[in-house]
Length: 596
Image 1 (cartoon, rainbow, N blue to C red):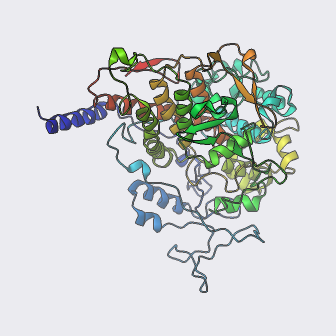
Image 2: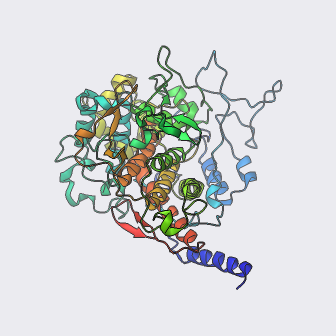
Image 3: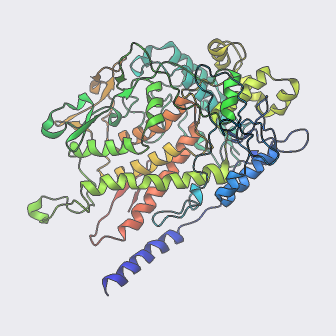
């Protein structure tokens, strides 16, 4: 067989493998058509409507705008998107903007004043057609799925929105201070009282999410009969190893020594060849955004207020990630796969062993060759990034084409209206009555919101001035990329290996100021492994978006699983392209393993 024919045959084999995988039917939670106003038309109150025109109460000016938006998502045609109404208005009868004759720019009637800064422009939706693209490697974007998101009137959503509120209250508590922090302990107690987190909920979860037990039900029980959430479980992920040791993964803190070992790993310097980068992050001011109705409404109408972050005067410019706000800053500006590329470089710098099923693991005098373009550094450094864009396409299909879930900020807006709206507005939001009841009381979530924002102002304090990105909440792009990238790393490296420096197991956490790393290895109940710290890294990045207020917990976990499926598919198909016989044992989100 000649080379051309064999190449074609292998490509066909990969395509046939992809086509033979089960292609599931996608289901959403039904809220899109279930929630209706007095006129019988859908309100879309449980769905993402950001950038479409809203009225003064936060509802769509015209539900037909949403219908046309969904139609454009289905076609993916840029002309259909260009014809949509967007922004606050005023609009011409054909839906286009009215324009300022002198500047040629749209006239935008924002509710808030932005002086002395210029008024914001309007923003468009981000990559709504990505889920319709086709890929030549790995699962097709529409061939992997996620279960329905929690319904707007579910106990599950009450729990995870309560968690997002509590994270907003605790953004500026240093991780090192958590054991003694009243804010953290209050959050642990408050969350432990919510029905969904209680150990005594019994079989009352039957039928949750239309019979599909969702991620928080699969999450370990957080409290015992209404007691406080254990410290090692609060605001953490759920995959193996994330509850071991410090809150932050070592891969977000340490360095890799550099050429000639010029740095200790506690310097946080990662060598990229002959240059280095620093793990410290830019420090933003302790400022929360969108806590008044006018700014909230403008953001829902598409105000492009990104880039208006405040930076703290009189502070150092950078520090180690030491609190939730730092994590939010990291995931606000990261290159999406950078944390996993960093982790790969750190593992290579540690000479971490690879999966024993890979080729060229023996000494060169035995194998007579070593890995480079295949099964070496350049291979894994490229592969860990290669899966990111494929995971993004798959999760975009879930976001836009399936679920279209509202962001936490929008749910906070509805809670504001439950407390401040007219009787008719409150009635239109009747599905949120149980959420309001669960948060009411001076010692609970509602009391903290009243103290932080003002009486009955239950808007979610946001870490970003622009709030969430301009795309739906479920699934989460960061989390899907996290699931894909760490799956690749867990497949490549010996996932049970203990992280070491000079032969000694390590565990560091930042001090309260974020100025240095502190050795806490003596406090560990068991050592930190490659698998656990990679799972923790994925959770840190994905839950970092929850710290910002732009995602829910289910967005993290279900998207992590989606990314995992994408990575496994890429590995299966790539295996067909190599002449060497090899295998990889890959640990999965649920503690099981699969062999490639």
